[in-house]
Amino acid sequence: MSEGPLEGKTVVFTGTLSRTREQLRAISHDVGANPKTVVSAKTDFLVAGRNAGS
Image (tube, rainbow, N blue to C red; front, side, top):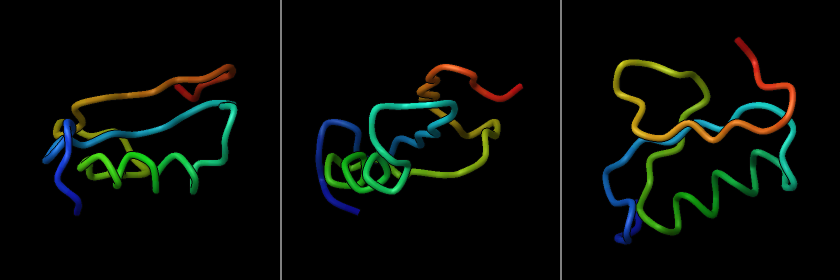
């Protein structure tokens, strides 16, 4: 994990977004976040695009 403004934070992407999830995970990792694929109690940020899951 890289150091950055989101260091140690968990982020999940859902729905239709302007970039692929792989791109968004790489970007979030570059700013220190820990990208995950599933929402949990440990999720700090949820980025929801159009048609986000339930």
